[in-house]
Amino acid sequence: MRIELPREAERFGANLFHGVQKVYELDSGLSYDVAKTEENVILRIPYEQLYEIEKQMVVVVPVYAERIKLIEGVLFAIPHQCLPVIVSNSPREPVDRFQMEKNAIENFCKFSKKKAIIVHQKDPILARAFEKAGYTHILNDRGEIKSGKAEGMMLATILAKLSGRKYLGFIDADNYFPGSAYEYILEYAAGFATSQSDYVMVRIVWQSKPKVMKSNLFFAKWGRTSVVTNRFLNMLISHYTGFETEVIKTGNAGEHALTMDLAMLLDYSSGYSIETCHFISLMEKFGGILKSPFPQIMRHHIDVYQIESRNPHLHESKGDDHVDDMIYASLQVVYHSPLCPDIIKEQIISELRQRKILEKGEKPDKPTYYPALENVNLEAFLDEIQEIPFSNILQLP
Image (cartoon, rainbow, N blue to C red; front, top):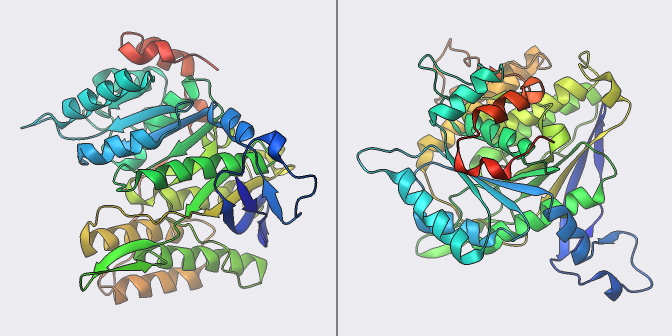
């Protein structure tokens, strides 16, 4: 890959939020193809280097009743050397959609000679494993893993950690273009290759989101949720640095990746707020405003890269109510952060009232928070799931 180096960056404590990077070549060839001189503003990452990183990458696909063809398309896009982990919370009655998904994935693995992990979020064995591992925050009153995308991502993170691999990437299942999913994984690897830190997050800025308008395709640049979330995250950074910024462009990026070292240290929040919560958790734990629980990491730095894709991103349209739900969930996390000053809280309330998400006198509810996964007893978790067929893929790091 040939990718530009970040043109700008905002330092927030130990966090280095890099500006958007553009890709100039998805495949820049093998290492021996490199020219003797390269422009120093463009970084060339040979195929072999990306391949070695992908060998150490788990790609998580959260699923909830998506069309089987869409799930298959994403699976086809995942490079062979990556380990796919599919976490489904699809309904099992009156039609067992999970069994349909499992059959399709097993068929894919048979023809591609590939290993993959597929689990259902409500599997009682996995719930029992969390209980034995001392992490009951994720369980509901019935002893099941709670429903929600964030909870599925947390389950996948533990499975990824047990696989012994170093990198963790997320790809949403409702993606109509397999080529874009493949590109995201290349860009995750490029971000990891760029950094010298063990604590790295890579987030995708979509090139465009096609919409059908009057029988024509319109390639919108920004999603309706992202515009709002990005604005408030940038306001929060500006409040503390004293300089207005627009550096954050990926406040709701479902397509993002982390080093396992970083993934185990971040807090999580429920529902659609999870992607924004990762930003807030970085600011709270490593921003230098609040006391950090990891002073040893504060002496180093965390790289956050935002890479603009070349493929357009076309996914399922879930309507205006879904957009409002995502905006509300994202701004809940910002509002209830101890970093958020009163002046920004007032603007959040004004934004939500203007959108008729809140009534006069109402304030955003506090979301459900989950502590970092670093204290999960991995050995106890692994012991409990030995009877599940895929457990032979897993090992203690």
